Length: 88
Image (cartoon, rainbow, N blue to C red; front, top):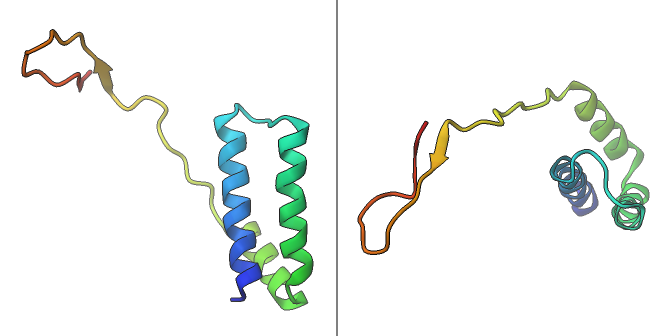
């Protein structure tokens, strides 16, 4: 895999994570910057690399994660030896 293909995957993963953390959408200015960087990598790749990335994106399963980690924060008094988070 070329440097461009590897970088494309990194940038795409970062963009998808940023979107998720932002609640599904990024401001147009930020989105535009990210897509421009992706485009630069895309056009630097060979046709075979582009096809491989498209094929892998079509077959990769989305990883789901729980939104509730089963823990809760607790009040801790100064000087006490108690963990600030416990199992719910």
